[in-house]
Image (cartoon, rainbow, N blue to C red; front, side, top):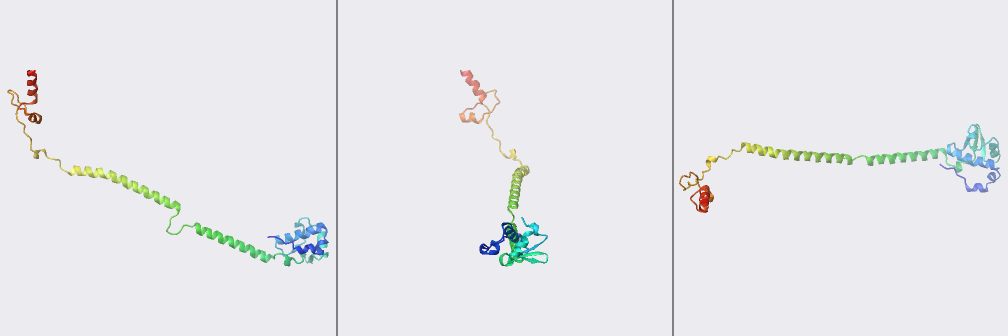
Length: 205
């Protein structure tokens, strides 16, 4: 809140005739009355709350018609014509307080998470939880596969060798040898086993 010093004071003889100390009191008293919302009233008890005030100041201002006597002190003349009244100041302050409350309420509503929509932190928490659950399921699935395979292997009957016919190889033709020919000997067109073939080769050399 501000007090006003109208430009017509510069041509007002009541103001121009004031000594410097009384002019200072007049200006500061207007500012003090606006700040304290007294509507221009200055009590005798409050006089010395105004900077640089003295006992001779009010008498000079009353003589010049700038102040008027009151039962408990003085009243600044034409105060309500120049300055803002206490009622208007209070209304302006209340409007400002209401605007501040409205702004704070809107900010709280904007910052409040929307229903059924998780906040940023809760979204991160849910997403991390879902990843942990997926990893746990994957670990369980990888562990379950060998167990299932092992169980199937245990249930599956082992192959019976008795069902496969045994291949019979011919006896060695070497006298006194009780060995048998193998596939390699048959492929080579021999009628003796490997041992006899080796011995016959040694004898020939």
